[in-house]
Length: 295
Image (cartoon, rainbow, N blue to C red; front, top):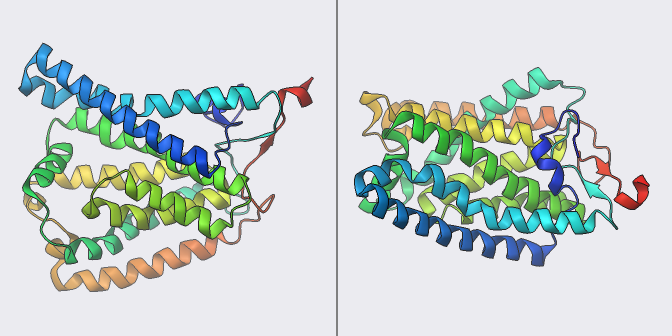
């Protein structure tokens, strides 16, 4: 169903409003997709050799991971459309702020949240060498391959799952907004699989989730995700910063001034988004008719 202002590719999922049990199914299907992705990596190793596979297999294996949950959600949405109303995944509930101001604010708040989240990373024990090497490959390897994986694929697929499916599903089924935002942020943290990424991901997920609840715009949360990941990618290609693991390493004592300014900025952005009125208690989502209603 083509809808003006929405990603057409997302329209097929509007009638899948996952329950708690459905969210568990989505997680299991994501794990199945991860296994399929490992099969792809193995086949790439056989066909191209370890060196070439290490550089390019993520371009295929990462999207493969989301194929099972996306197929399941599309099928469930198609069946539900005959009987139930849907909730659009992507909306434009941005008045009275407007798109331009929303875009500037969410990008700034995302960068600020990255600075705040770095405090948790600094108090964790040292990252295992294998994990550190894997993350460095995502930010210091082939720039264009990493850009596609980190800045394009991750924002699209992860926001579709964590905000578009999990949070929208919980809100659409009457879960209190605060709980829906926190649970979707926990889901977002869980799929990162390690505390060094999971704790900052949870903090970012809460911010993304609040913006999604108020605006219903998956475009905005994808932009926020893109901003965070692309900034990390750019930092990884600056020679003087490659050895820095946190903002504390980069800024030294000045980190605490940036921390305080970042917290203030996030609070101001949240207060600004509170001005956006909600069309319904479940959030800024457009209700779509069932196929029966359209007839």
